[in-house]
Amino acid sequence: MADTTGNKDAKNFGIGVPVETEGYFLKGSCHYDWGMQDRLSRIFNPKSGKTVMLAFDHGYFMGPTSGLERMDLSVVPLAPYADVLMCTRGALRTSIPPTSNKPVCLRCSGGISILKELSNEEVAVAIDDVIRLNCSAMAVQVHIGAEFETQTVNNMFKLIDAGMRHGIPTLGVTAVGKDMARDARYLGLATRIIAEMGAQFVKTYYCAEKFEEVTAGCPIPIVIAGGKKIPELDALTMAYNAIDQGASGVDMGRNIFQADNPIAMLKAVRSVVHEGNKPKDALDLYNTLKSES
Ligand code: 5RP
Figure 1: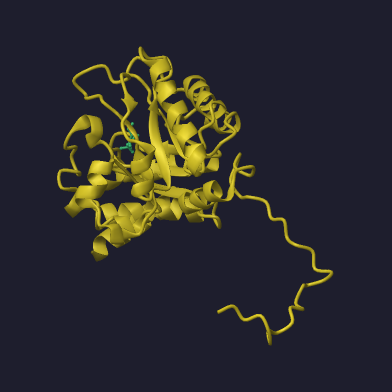
Figure 2: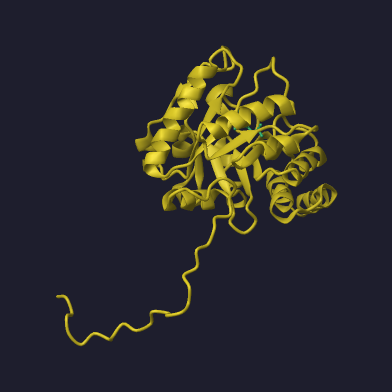
C-alpha cells in the first residue's frame, strides 16, 4: 500500500549547486543517446579513452585459423584480459561462457570464404539476435574500391539504422583488398566514408607514413587491426605508434593468440594502449610474464 502520510519532508534540493553537465569522453560521440553512450563506455575505457579488443572472428571466412582451432581452449583463458571480445555469434554460443561478463562486438556481416570474392558479403545477423546476445556493438566489413563496394556499404547502412533504433554502436571494418595499398590515402578515404555514413567507430590498419592524417581526418574513434603475426616488438611498436598518432585502441587477433604466450602478449599490449608504455618496456614486461608462467 502507498504510504501517503508520515513521510519525511523532501528538502535536500542542493539549492545553489549547479547540476553538472558533463561532456562525453569519446571523439564524435557526444550527441548520442544514453544507451549508445553506455555501450560505447563499455568498449572504450572512460578513464584512458582507449580499448584493447580481442578479435577472433577469423573463422567466419578463413575457417580454423592457427591459434583458434579450439576457441574454448585458446580464447577463454584470454578473455579476462581483454576489454572487448570480437567474434561471431557461432563462436560466442559454442565456445564462450556467458559468465565471461565481457562486452561483445559481434561480427554481423558474412557470406564469404577465402575461396571466392571476399567483398561479396551480406548482413549475416538480425538485430533481434544482437540484442538477445546482449552485444555492445556490431561489426561490419566495408570493402571500399572492391567489386561489391556498394553492397557492403549498404550492409553497413542497414546495421547502423538498426543500431540507432536500439542504441547499439556499429564498427565499420575497412577491408583492404589484395590489390589495394594500405597507405594513408586509401585508409583515409575508407575510414572517412565509414564515419560519414554514420558508423560509431572504425577499424583499420596502421600505416607507417601519415597515419596521423588518417586519424585526424576521421571524426570517429579508430582502432587498428594487428594483421599477420609479426615479432612481438614490432607488434608492440605498431600499437604504440598508432596510439601516439591518434588511434583510440587496437582490435588485435593473430598477434595475440598466435604469440608464444598469448596472455603475456595481451597484458603487454594493454600496457601500451592504456598506460602509454614504450614498446621496449612492454617487450620487457612480455618477457618477464612469459618467463614467470
Ligand atoms: C577481419 C577482421 C578481423 O577480426 C581482424 O582483422 C583480425 O585481426 P588481426 O588482423 O589482428 O588478426 O576484422 O577483417
